[in-house]
Amino acid sequence: MTDLLVQTAGESHGPCGTAFITGMPAGLKVDTDFINTALRRRQGGYGRGGRQRIETDEVEVTSGVRLGLTTGAPIVLQVPNKDARLDDLERTPPMHRPRPGHADLAGSLKYDTDDCRNVLERASARETAARTAAGALTRLLLREVGIETFAYLRGLLDIDAPVTVTDDLEALRAACDASEVYNPDPAASAAMIDHIRQAKVNKDTVGGLCEVHVLGCPPGLGTCMERMETLDSKLAGAVMSIQAFKGVEVGLGCAVTTRTGSQVHDPIEHDGHGYVRPTNNAGGIEGGMTNGMPIVVRGAMKPISTLLQGLPSVDMRTHEAQQSTYERSDVCAAPAASVVMEHVVAVEIAAAVLRRYAGDTLSQIKTAMGIK
Ligand SMILES: Cc1cc2nc3c(=O)[nH]c(=O)nc-3n(C[C@H](O)[C@H](O)[C@H](O)COP(=O)(O)O)c2cc1C
Image (cartoon, rainbow, N blue to C red; front, side, top):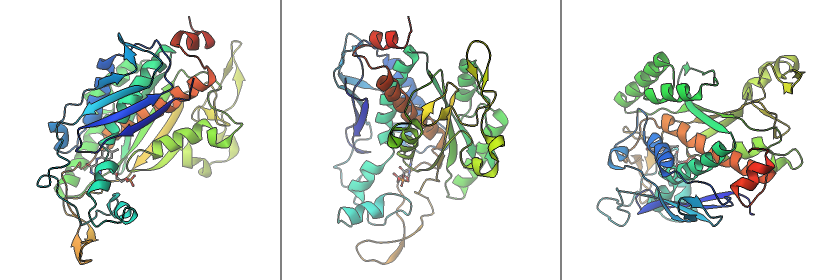
């Protein structure tokens, strides 16, 4: 059994996005409706651009699944692009005025070209459709072993609207889905929508603060033995890999510097059945391992770098000062990014489960975890 690994391929306007997944056990029921629901949520959220009206993302499973069950072989998931036009030079022309904040300039310097097109087609967050599909597959595995994920948009500009994650996850998910920005609080949602609307009027963009909770993890996922293998470092890497994410926190995160030790560290108690923690400032991870409390991770997304007003840039052919190119774009993709974050976190948690409770089949893994 190899470690769980998810890789993707595909350009924003190529024929499809592809996820290549190795290390999944045999015997997992692949519910494509579940994956498609995740893909639809990734497409949603107030502030998205015209692309999402063109696409209706649906997964195609082309390898590793027979009669609806994983076989243990590599799995390939594909998400076709309706707006496929990579080789159409009229509709997808070369791009010479790099957008500050995007991959355009750095990538063009790296690949020795004054046309940013190749770089931006791959750097684009269209890639997150394939990664979300792969993450949804790993969520199906996690559900089998009693682990659930929940994501929402916690903040945007001056708004911070944290949620208390209760046992009634379904109610929370429904409230989240009822919000156009994926925050269960209607007042906070309305205020966020106002900010996004105003940014659009100003030909500007906004980012946001996404938060993911993982419930039901047994203690001991991850390790303290190799620092680069700690669960928090894996989660930080995964969250930071999402396009436009510039900060990651676990539990209290950066706020630990504003408190003393007695105000930060969660007391340890025993209730006769097991260890309990009255608080969860650690966000469910101590020493790089799960401690039995819910995992809480936050990711900060910067504002979208394609602005209708453009930003100061230069034409790479002439080096003359020009405003950056505008390509059809989102004004705010932070609600969608919360969905992406949920799914990259799910991949890391599933990888940690499979590392600790290794097995070739789902039933072997369940037996190792003591699940009937
Ligand atoms: C869900 C999602 C949607 C995005 N949509 C856009 C977009 O429409 N326009 C844009 O310029 N950037 C968008 N981005 C961000 C860029 O992909 C990202 O800034 C770029 O690839 C450079 O990577 P970096 O910001 O991590 O350095 C989006 C990011 C995410 C997560």
